[in-house]
Length: 93
Image 1 (cartoon, rainbow, N blue to C red):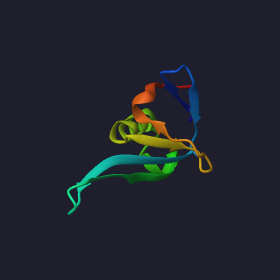
Image 2 (cartoon, rainbow, N blue to C red):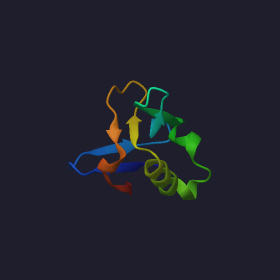
Image 3 (cartoon, rainbow, N blue to C red):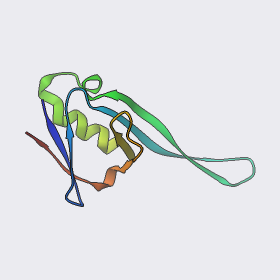
């Protein structure tokens, strides 16, 4: 299994079974002080293999995760997050 996440800037990120992915969803909570408190909830944390059910749904699971997330990080030691809206397409190699 190998997939590529293709970004709007022309860059491509290679995804395999062992690729570690973290995904976050935006949340907001109105606090007692009437100030908005913005934060991210982690909605997925693990390898690509952890997030799929069968071999037939590889693209579908990744598409679903990216659709549900606002920010994603690809790779365990990656210090850069990627806005999910920067994803243009997902292709199978």
